[in-house]
Image (cartoon, rainbow, N blue to C red):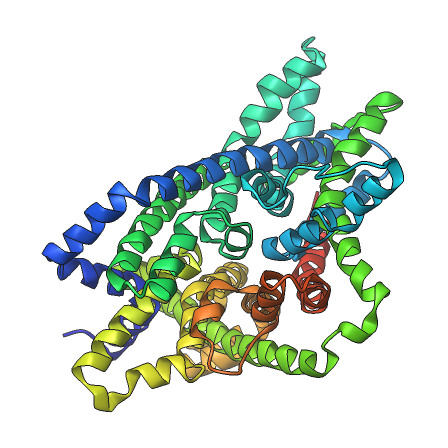
Length: 536
């Protein structure tokens, strides 16, 4: 007979995996009508969705590698003035939601924007002078400069302790600089590059704000069009399944790459790294290093922020200050509720894994960790399919009301996606607590609740606060799930920014967009401080 703890863990896992279970249940109801819908999409929109999504993923993947890898190599293997500042400055684009960056570039570079207007007036030219920013290449540009920190951070971590001494050993053996980079540094960083690229591509596949605003027909846009515009749940479920399959493939590749990561963390390795100093750069090589490190910061953070500040400085009267506080209050309330519940769920899961590490617990942890990889579009479809089934079978339950007219469905969707973020932070905190403390507490007669409250809780305070901060910021920036599941008259900053930009009210969209950037800076500051405090 399963214990109460096992039943609770299975129930929690089922709640967090409901989107995947809902989509799987749809396929159990496969019939001739579903087959006809799939054949119709295969003959019309499906090839376009697949081709556009793969092209966007391949180009964006090449972009994040081209931007993130050189920056990581420069700040780890070379020494030049300002290197320590660039170590944390290169993390700033993490604070920029991709759709906010898209709005900023569109406002500045479009035909009626200030740059093209100034060029036409100053040089007496006519017509469009720059390529259309709302295009596939525009989306690749946005994703490359907002998502490269995934590659940069993992590559920098992989190279930070071992690259200097190995490159120094190669130099003593007579290898020139190009060969050292090609045959020592890059092979050492290859698993980290693969893992970081896979994480960035998960964000690309999950994105709705950029592809919708730029009019790109990707799988995510197709899911929302099938559900909201065509009111075709079968087509939305089929497209969501294909999107989920692509994301799970990327997740498998990312986990496989992570298993190949090896970090030399011993004291001897750190001492060896201190002895092998990075290669100093001077002259034009130093200028080139500055350019390669400064460009991602400029294009991924500084310029988008300046583009959004321009309409604020031009006319403050058009800004919706009265409604802004309502939108911010909705975002903060949802973020705080989800952060509290997410950290509580993570603590329960991590504590269960520590107390009774069995097959059931490991399986539940793996299922809970999958949530962050599931795109918001898949979460929405996977939640609404069983809700619609319950509403049709038992109207008296009012399942549709509770999931769409209240915050229940929205908070549930947030938990499905972001419990994994809290769990990772809490598990990192538990890894620093020796098991001998648990044994000592039990020897002194402490029960389960006393062990959790009086021993673990004080030691997990920093990890819990970090988990709450990360979940809170992710909820504030979440757009796809919020756009569909939010209750009536409960707009958030992310939804309002998207709606104002879609209506070409980019000046008004700057205020909620900048608020999201300010909130996004919080985990970036925390991460940069943690990296600086880490032993070198």
